[in-house]
Image (cartoon, rainbow, N blue to C red):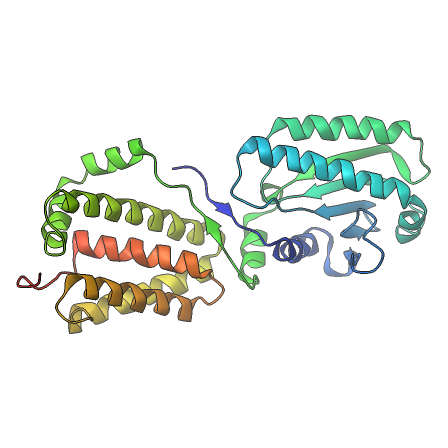
Length: 306
């Protein structure tokens, strides 16, 4: 399945970047330039000791690679113009030290076109012969892969909001999973056949499989990038599963009512344990988990329901 994309709010990305830069340069060596009063000079953060400037930028996702790359290139061009216009003030920020690097810090960098744009802008900026710039000045783009995994995990744990965008599984991925899990499909069809009938059973099973795969990808993403949050979500799911095994499902006898009740209960439990996880992600994980419970147990519906 395609990679997970974080849906970053620009302010969240800027604060997240601040945490990453603290790890790289030291807490006392990273300075913020507020943009609320007379602009930010093309600078979000700077480090005097390393003579480097960072501009943070998160493209509104989801978009394709071409769109993401173009928006990143446009951001580089626009903010370097600010840097040139405000060169005198920027030099004061750096205490007169020549600037060695201007870095666009982004969540995802996945196009060589942006590297080529950085190279062109490096040459353009050097050609200006500005006193601000070191002879070795470079325009760079960096993303999360430039930081150690532990640094990313610690920064992720401090986020106020976390939202992930997971691409839907492809038809081939669905087909491959179904081909390897015939017993689970039979089990799901038998249970969901108590809620719907005829061709609708196959549709319901297919929707359940897709929800299960999406939920798994989200849980795996949390495990890699935010282990503490993952553990809280996993614990909430385990607690709800134990309750379901012991007390049975909520919602009466109608399968549709049981499903709505269990999805709502699990979503609520996940949000209570991991309040920084987005509502949409919490529901997607709950839907995937409920789908798995239908395929593997412990969730079933009364035989006499209709």
